[in-house]
Amino acid sequence: MDTFHNRARRRLFIGLSVAGVGLMLLPGCSSSQMTRTTHPWERQVLAANDGWAAAEGGTSGGAHAQPGFVFEVRNRAELVAALAVGTPGTPRIVRVLGRIDLCVDSRNRPVDAEAFRDPAFDFEAYLRAYAPAVWGKQPPTGPLEAARQRSADRQQATVVVPVPSNTTVIGVGRDAGFKNGTLLLQDVDNVIVRNLHFSDAYDHFPAWDPKDNANGEWNSEYDNLSLSNATHVWVDHCTFDDGTRPDHTARTALGRPMQHHDGLLDITARSNWVTVSYCHFRGHDKTNLVGNSDQSNDSDRLKVSFHHNWWEHCGERAPRVRFGQVHVYNNLYTGSDQPPYPLGYSIGVGVQSRLVVQNNVWETPAHVPATRLVRLWRGQVLAAQDNWHNGRPVDLLAALQRAHPGVALNADVGWMPSWHGPIDPVAEVAHRVRAQAGAGRT
Image 1 (cartoon, rainbow, N blue to C red):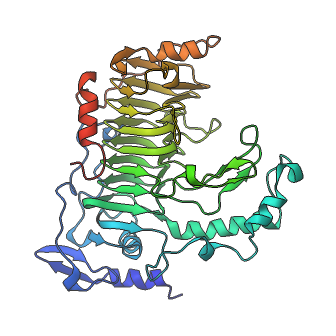
Image 2 (cartoon, rainbow, N blue to C red):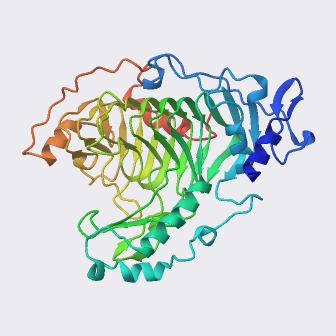
Image 3 (tube, rainbow, N blue to C red):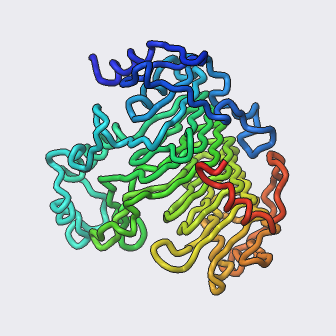
């Protein structure tokens, strides 16, 4: 079948050389439109010892890309074509110019929920059918739920863009990035994502789960950046937020606030050897999940480092961890107890997690207690040292124990971080992170 994507892919194979640098002609671009906009970081590899992504051979992304596999993309069609050309493991560098809307049609025109809605899906009828007083606590089934799922599948086919192994995706300039969709790193190895602003991965058709919490919850599907069974990944100097449609502005339905966004950056399903550095997460509820299920078989996986990141007005999951050996150091947390995103907790100590938390800074209103900085989710151990809360040392393990006096907790996580560079003195963390974290903050 001669689909749009097949035609775009054929056009991508037309090579061209500009100013001595091999570039591929992307769909919709003439040779006069192609420019040499190299980024000084695009062939950088992760430095030795810079977090868990430096282990087991390190992370180089597309640093070894041949000139014909260096691409510049300005829209979704060009992005998809650049990621599809060649074999899946061919090293490639994808330079992102400007903010790319991932929720567009084949002519790069923005589309809304009506473009994906199955004709049989009527949201108001859905609410009447699955109201708790009518339907009860069982998961929705039947024609309306099937129509919602078909609508969701249509959206997913457009807004989720998979990234292959041995790839560097890098923003050029101060405002490059993606909106209205997801970059998916699934079953891949060796990927670098840098200098990008991710915004508003909006789910038009969230699912109703009547068994989630006491009164049911709406659950959305899309993260801005999602890692699923992805290994050797470095995410650096990126900004993540919900854009102009934050969840606190959404309607209430079936008695619960609707949720149209999932995580900002989630690391799940046996992902391993990941470093997240100098990123800015802001204005979001459930921010970073490491490990997606208490029942998953993720032992000896989910080795992740978070360093020099800024969580600004994030409600929770910064991060929430299951199973993993996760090193959280030299990060800044700024929050409040006021809407729209009051601080519920920052670090979640989940089942079989082995967290080492050191030299981090929390800045909150004075009356917010230390017990709000950490939360227990069936975990048992936490190693924490040299952390500050409002300019004073805070004992996170003791705070966790105070919140759970009947649970036996200890600091024996069974491992010692070795994959890291120099750890900054805690007194320097807030200034450095504010100055350097996020896209465009080189």
